Length: 111
Image (cartoon, rainbow, N blue to C red; front, side, top):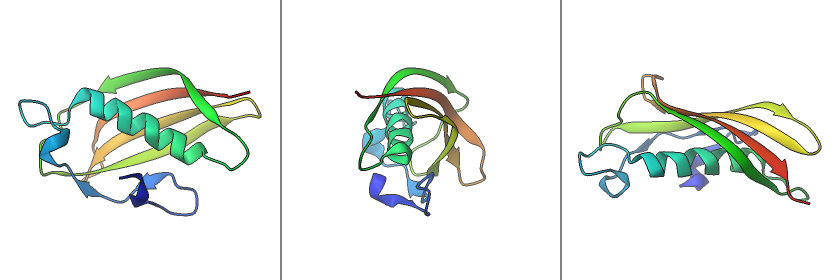
């Protein structure tokens, strides 16, 4: 799925349709899957050949459900980067750019 990231800065995901196997019993995006997607998107935006970052904290807000079959995209904003860490704001958005989930993730440099 992360192969769908595009743009020179790798901070946004091409729209993808939410498959049923990523949904909870009421056919909405599963919260655990949303957390995994947002953390992976943030780490992907930070990925470099010589530095390895790991998440040290994460604050997640679930704003509204995302039903199966709806198109979604992940958007990453690297709010703060240093030699030792970074902070990323990641959102899962519908086609109309309305956010369904948001996370603030702090990454630390693996030393």
